[in-house]
Length: 451
Image (cartoon, rainbow, N blue to C red):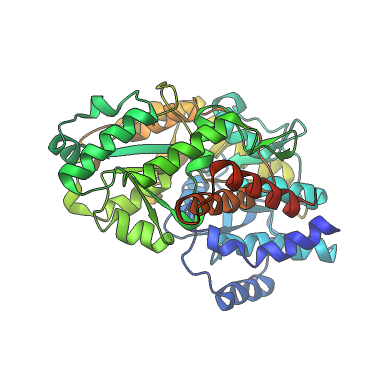
């Protein structure tokens, strides 16, 4: 019951974390309530045997991907229809599942829901009866990226069908590197110490930071740890103060901030609108969903390129941040149809057969980069992107996806992020030592987890 009560409290605060992976920027309580009320009055099931319903959000990102999938599946089932019931933000979907589960009535849910990856395990833990096992779906599971599937595979069962890869990119402004005496090759396959040196030179010559991150929702720790194949959790418990890799990563981030190589934004708006679109930075490291934000500055087209991120040792760094998948709810009465539709479209089956309608159209119409390895072979994924100096970044990102390490996930991912962000501020502003800051972060996280 404690976990369920915590889940109910969390749905009211999740909106602040939903800005990534195509979430709506509207996070007001009224907007959430209106969406929930609207969903309650709208039919969530169809009597038609060839129609499925789905909750999703973001008409510029996720929903074009679903429309592409509907079109793709109509090649094998011309009578098929996918009814998208649009939510204002991802937290509305989480709230709908929570309310249905707490009421013991899943009839209020559609056949399928789009769900953020980092939250799903928490909802299986709290509400195991809300979901249907999709393990027997005819998917190319091996081609979908082990790390991506780690979010939706629980106790050996597959529940989710990946929509977008949260695979991280590290993008550099090549013109600013050149002003500081460097090329893209100089920032490829480097250590974080080498990155710090280059960043100080870039700051001195151009006045730009080589990296930025939202200080109130700092994802650097998670991504930098994942590059090393290490988690913030071990055997279901916080792994912070005695985690040697985390300590090293934490000290790197603190040093980058002290050297004015890393700009820690005050909030998400400061990060996107000021740091990135305000032309304060020569480097961006985050999930690939950050690309549309970067593209808003059209005068920088052709000046960006991406490479694997720095690491502690200098090996190529691969990480992921954000992303969502599709899940079949307990209320779905057409499970075979749902499995076949999702397997054919987002499950990699059509791409394996030499077709890539879902992946190609989702990329072209919504900027959604899929996780399927076979999709990267299409002409659409192989094309050069002008904004990134003609680099075929979409194919590169799918390749990166296959190299992202699978690390232990937790229901408390976002709480860990919050406490590590606070620990960093305590070191930078409040005189804490690293040891003191991390010990406090672990203690607070354990409290959150009831340990």
